[in-house]
Image (cartoon, rainbow, N blue to C red; front, side, top):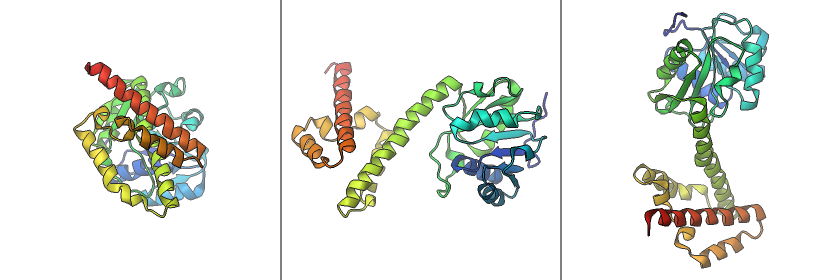
Length: 273
Protein backbone atom coordinates (compact mmCIF):
# COMPACT_ATOMS: atom_id res chain seq x y z
CA UNK A 1 0.00 0.00 0.00
CA UNK A 2 1.16 3.49 -0.79
CA UNK A 3 2.83 5.28 2.11
CA UNK A 4 0.91 8.41 3.04
CA UNK A 5 2.98 11.50 3.66
CA UNK A 6 1.48 14.23 5.83
CA UNK A 7 4.46 16.53 6.31
CA UNK A 8 5.89 19.34 4.25
CA UNK A 9 7.81 16.87 2.06
CA UNK A 10 4.60 15.66 0.45
CA UNK A 11 4.86 16.47 -3.25
CA UNK A 12 1.65 18.11 -4.47
CA UNK A 13 0.89 19.36 -7.99
CA UNK A 14 -1.91 21.83 -8.61
CA UNK A 15 -3.28 21.95 -12.13
CA UNK A 16 -4.85 25.37 -12.55
CA UNK A 17 -4.34 28.86 -11.16
CA UNK A 18 -7.89 30.20 -11.05
CA UNK A 19 -10.06 31.12 -8.09
CA UNK A 20 -10.38 27.66 -6.52
CA UNK A 21 -6.81 26.60 -7.26
CA UNK A 22 -5.47 29.81 -5.75
CA UNK A 23 -7.33 29.40 -2.47
CA UNK A 24 -6.41 25.71 -2.18
CA UNK A 25 -2.74 26.46 -2.86
CA UNK A 26 -2.68 29.18 -0.21
CA UNK A 27 -4.52 26.95 2.28
CA UNK A 28 -2.04 24.12 1.71
CA UNK A 29 0.84 26.51 2.30
CA UNK A 30 -0.73 27.71 5.56
CA UNK A 31 -1.17 24.07 6.59
CA UNK A 32 2.53 23.35 6.06
CA UNK A 33 1.90 21.45 2.82
CA UNK A 34 2.94 23.92 0.13
CA UNK A 35 2.49 22.74 -3.46
CA UNK A 36 5.58 21.53 -5.26
CA UNK A 37 4.46 22.73 -8.68
CA UNK A 38 1.74 24.83 -10.29
CA UNK A 39 0.53 24.42 -13.87
CA UNK A 40 -1.56 26.95 -15.73
CA UNK A 41 -2.32 27.53 -19.38
CA UNK A 42 -0.51 30.87 -19.21
CA UNK A 43 2.94 31.42 -17.77
CA UNK A 44 1.82 34.63 -16.09
CA UNK A 45 -0.92 33.06 -13.98
CA UNK A 46 1.19 30.00 -13.13
CA UNK A 47 4.09 32.19 -12.05
CA UNK A 48 1.92 34.53 -9.99
CA UNK A 49 0.42 31.70 -7.94
CA UNK A 50 3.71 29.81 -7.66
CA UNK A 51 5.47 32.88 -6.30
CA UNK A 52 2.75 33.36 -3.68
CA UNK A 53 3.30 29.84 -2.31
CA UNK A 54 7.00 29.42 -3.16
CA UNK A 55 7.08 26.58 -5.66
CA UNK A 56 7.88 25.64 -9.26
CA UNK A 57 5.59 26.52 -12.14
CA UNK A 58 5.03 25.60 -15.77
CA UNK A 59 2.57 26.13 -18.58
CA UNK A 60 3.51 22.84 -20.27
CA UNK A 61 1.78 19.63 -19.17
CA UNK A 62 4.75 17.59 -20.37
CA UNK A 63 6.93 19.34 -17.78
CA UNK A 64 4.86 18.31 -14.77
CA UNK A 65 6.87 16.24 -12.30
CA UNK A 66 6.29 12.50 -12.53
CA UNK A 67 6.82 11.49 -8.90
CA UNK A 68 4.20 13.60 -7.11
CA UNK A 69 2.17 12.10 -4.27
CA UNK A 70 -0.98 14.05 -5.15
CA UNK A 71 -2.25 16.00 -8.14
CA UNK A 72 -5.15 18.40 -7.66
CA UNK A 73 -6.90 19.24 -10.94
CA UNK A 74 -8.68 22.54 -10.41
CA UNK A 75 -9.79 23.78 -13.83
CA UNK A 76 -13.11 24.58 -15.49
CA UNK A 77 -15.43 21.58 -15.40
CA UNK A 78 -15.42 21.08 -19.17
CA UNK A 79 -11.63 20.66 -19.19
CA UNK A 80 -11.26 18.18 -16.30
CA UNK A 81 -11.48 15.02 -18.41
CA UNK A 82 -9.08 16.22 -21.12
CA UNK A 83 -6.53 17.44 -18.57
CA UNK A 84 -6.79 14.19 -16.60
CA UNK A 85 -6.23 12.14 -19.75
CA UNK A 86 -2.95 13.98 -20.28
CA UNK A 87 -1.52 14.24 -16.77
CA UNK A 88 -2.41 10.77 -15.48
CA UNK A 89 -0.13 9.03 -17.99
CA UNK A 90 3.10 7.70 -16.48
CA UNK A 91 2.26 8.78 -12.93
CA UNK A 92 1.08 5.54 -11.35
CA UNK A 93 2.18 6.53 -7.82
CA UNK A 94 0.18 9.76 -7.84
CA UNK A 95 -3.30 10.15 -6.37
CA UNK A 96 -5.34 12.35 -8.71
CA UNK A 97 -8.32 14.43 -7.64
CA UNK A 98 -10.47 17.18 -9.08
CA UNK A 99 -12.26 19.97 -7.21
CA UNK A 100 -15.56 20.13 -9.10
CA UNK A 101 -18.97 19.81 -7.50
CA UNK A 102 -20.71 18.64 -10.66
CA UNK A 103 -18.11 16.35 -12.26
CA UNK A 104 -18.25 12.71 -11.13
CA UNK A 105 -15.47 10.43 -10.01
CA UNK A 106 -15.94 8.45 -13.21
CA UNK A 107 -14.10 11.18 -15.15
CA UNK A 108 -10.94 9.29 -14.11
CA UNK A 109 -12.14 5.89 -15.37
CA UNK A 110 -9.34 3.90 -17.04
CA UNK A 111 -6.90 6.80 -16.55
CA UNK A 112 -5.28 6.05 -13.18
CA UNK A 113 -5.25 3.62 -10.26
CA UNK A 114 -5.95 6.06 -7.44
CA UNK A 115 -8.27 9.03 -7.81
CA UNK A 116 -11.01 11.02 -6.18
CA UNK A 117 -12.57 14.38 -5.46
CA UNK A 118 -11.82 17.22 -3.08
CA UNK A 119 -14.72 19.65 -3.48
CA UNK A 120 -14.65 22.83 -1.37
CA UNK A 121 -18.18 24.24 -1.36
CA UNK A 122 -17.68 27.98 -1.36
CA UNK A 123 -17.78 30.94 -3.72
CA UNK A 124 -14.20 31.89 -4.48
CA UNK A 125 -12.65 35.09 -5.81
CA UNK A 126 -8.87 35.41 -6.02
CA UNK A 127 -8.70 38.77 -4.26
CA UNK A 128 -11.18 37.96 -1.47
CA UNK A 129 -9.45 36.37 1.51
CA UNK A 130 -11.27 33.46 3.17
CA UNK A 131 -10.82 31.35 6.28
CA UNK A 132 -10.46 28.01 4.53
CA UNK A 133 -10.73 26.18 7.86
CA UNK A 134 -14.45 27.01 7.88
CA UNK A 135 -15.16 25.89 4.32
CA UNK A 136 -17.07 22.60 3.96
CA UNK A 137 -15.02 20.14 1.92
CA UNK A 138 -16.50 16.99 0.39
CA UNK A 139 -14.25 14.04 -0.30
CA UNK A 140 -14.59 10.93 -2.41
CA UNK A 141 -12.06 8.27 -3.42
CA UNK A 142 -12.07 5.22 -5.64
CA UNK A 143 -10.33 3.05 -3.03
CA UNK A 144 -9.24 3.13 0.61
CA UNK A 145 -5.79 4.49 -0.17
CA UNK A 146 -6.96 7.39 -2.34
CA UNK A 147 -9.76 8.23 0.09
CA UNK A 148 -7.32 8.32 3.00
CA UNK A 149 -4.84 10.56 1.18
CA UNK A 150 -7.52 12.99 -0.04
CA UNK A 151 -9.06 13.05 3.43
CA UNK A 152 -5.63 13.89 4.89
CA UNK A 153 -5.28 16.83 2.54
CA UNK A 154 -8.83 18.02 3.17
CA UNK A 155 -8.53 17.87 6.96
CA UNK A 156 -5.21 19.72 6.79
CA UNK A 157 -6.91 22.75 5.23
CA UNK A 158 -10.46 22.53 6.61
CA UNK A 159 -12.17 21.69 9.89
CA UNK A 160 -15.38 20.84 8.07
CA UNK A 161 -14.75 17.70 5.99
CA UNK A 162 -17.29 15.10 4.89
CA UNK A 163 -17.35 12.02 2.68
CA UNK A 164 -19.86 12.32 -0.16
CA UNK A 165 -20.58 10.28 -3.28
CA UNK A 166 -20.60 11.76 -6.77
CA UNK A 167 -24.40 11.48 -7.06
CA UNK A 168 -25.02 13.31 -3.78
CA UNK A 169 -22.38 15.92 -4.60
CA UNK A 170 -24.07 16.75 -7.91
CA UNK A 171 -27.34 17.45 -6.10
CA UNK A 172 -25.47 19.54 -3.52
CA UNK A 173 -23.84 21.55 -6.30
CA UNK A 174 -27.19 22.13 -8.00
CA UNK A 175 -28.64 23.43 -4.72
CA UNK A 176 -25.57 25.67 -4.30
CA UNK A 177 -26.09 27.14 -7.78
CA UNK A 178 -29.58 28.25 -6.79
CA UNK A 179 -28.53 29.49 -3.35
CA UNK A 180 -25.39 31.31 -4.45
CA UNK A 181 -25.05 31.90 -8.19
CA UNK A 182 -28.68 32.67 -8.95
CA UNK A 183 -29.13 34.84 -5.88
CA UNK A 184 -25.99 36.77 -6.82
CA UNK A 185 -27.43 37.31 -10.30
CA UNK A 186 -30.39 38.94 -8.56
CA UNK A 187 -27.93 41.12 -6.64
CA UNK A 188 -26.54 42.25 -10.00
CA UNK A 189 -30.07 43.22 -11.08
CA UNK A 190 -30.58 45.06 -7.77
CA UNK A 191 -27.29 46.89 -8.20
CA UNK A 192 -28.30 47.98 -11.69
CA UNK A 193 -31.66 49.32 -10.49
CA UNK A 194 -29.99 51.26 -7.70
CA UNK A 195 -27.21 52.69 -9.88
CA UNK A 196 -29.67 53.91 -12.48
CA UNK A 197 -31.41 55.85 -9.74
CA UNK A 198 -28.33 57.29 -8.09
CA UNK A 199 -28.27 54.85 -5.17
CA UNK A 200 -25.52 52.58 -3.86
CA UNK A 201 -25.78 48.80 -3.41
CA UNK A 202 -24.32 49.03 0.11
CA UNK A 203 -27.65 50.44 1.29
CA UNK A 204 -28.99 46.87 1.02
CA UNK A 205 -26.25 45.39 3.22
CA UNK A 206 -28.29 45.28 6.48
CA UNK A 207 -31.19 43.67 4.63
CA UNK A 208 -28.95 41.00 3.09
CA UNK A 209 -27.21 40.29 6.39
CA UNK A 210 -30.54 39.77 8.17
CA UNK A 211 -31.83 37.60 5.32
CA UNK A 212 -28.90 35.22 5.79
CA UNK A 213 -28.88 35.50 9.58
CA UNK A 214 -32.46 34.38 10.08
CA UNK A 215 -31.87 31.28 7.97
CA UNK A 216 -29.91 30.01 10.97
CA UNK A 217 -33.16 29.66 12.89
CA UNK A 218 -35.86 29.55 10.23
CA UNK A 219 -36.47 27.27 7.26
CA UNK A 220 -36.19 29.21 3.98
CA UNK A 221 -39.91 28.78 3.28
CA UNK A 222 -40.72 30.36 6.67
CA UNK A 223 -38.26 33.23 6.16
CA UNK A 224 -39.85 34.45 2.92
CA UNK A 225 -41.37 37.93 2.96
CA UNK A 226 -42.41 40.53 0.39
CA UNK A 227 -45.34 41.46 -1.84
CA UNK A 228 -45.63 38.02 -3.49
CA UNK A 229 -46.02 36.37 -0.08
CA UNK A 230 -48.67 38.89 0.92
CA UNK A 231 -50.43 38.61 -2.43
CA UNK A 232 -50.19 42.39 -2.76
CA UNK A 233 -51.38 42.71 -6.37
CA UNK A 234 -51.18 46.50 -6.47
CA UNK A 235 -47.46 46.48 -5.58
CA UNK A 236 -46.73 43.55 -7.89
CA UNK A 237 -48.41 45.24 -10.85
CA UNK A 238 -46.71 48.55 -10.09
CA UNK A 239 -43.26 47.02 -9.93
CA UNK A 240 -43.81 45.01 -13.12
CA UNK A 241 -44.67 48.30 -14.84
CA UNK A 242 -41.50 49.91 -13.47
CA UNK A 243 -39.47 47.24 -15.29
CA UNK A 244 -41.07 47.87 -18.69
CA UNK A 245 -37.76 49.02 -20.19
CA UNK A 246 -36.06 45.70 -19.42
CA UNK A 247 -38.13 42.78 -20.69
CA UNK A 248 -35.84 40.02 -19.40
CA UNK A 249 -35.77 41.41 -15.86
CA UNK A 250 -39.51 42.07 -16.01
CA UNK A 251 -40.09 38.41 -16.95
CA UNK A 252 -37.78 37.35 -14.13
CA UNK A 253 -39.76 39.45 -11.65
CA UNK A 254 -43.06 37.93 -12.80
CA UNK A 255 -41.69 34.36 -12.73
CA UNK A 256 -40.04 34.72 -9.34
CA UNK A 257 -43.25 36.21 -7.89
CA UNK A 258 -45.21 33.27 -9.29
CA UNK A 259 -42.74 30.80 -7.78
CA UNK A 260 -42.94 32.50 -4.37
CA UNK A 261 -46.75 32.49 -4.46
CA UNK A 262 -46.77 28.82 -5.45
CA UNK A 263 -44.34 27.93 -2.65
CA UNK A 264 -46.51 29.69 -0.09
CA UNK A 265 -49.64 27.96 -1.43
CA UNK A 266 -47.93 24.56 -1.15
CA UNK A 267 -46.83 25.42 2.38
CA UNK A 268 -50.43 26.11 3.40
CA UNK A 269 -51.63 22.85 1.81
CA UNK A 270 -48.94 20.86 3.61
CA UNK A 271 -49.76 22.45 6.95
CA UNK A 272 -53.48 21.90 6.44
CA UNK A 273 -54.26 25.58 6.84
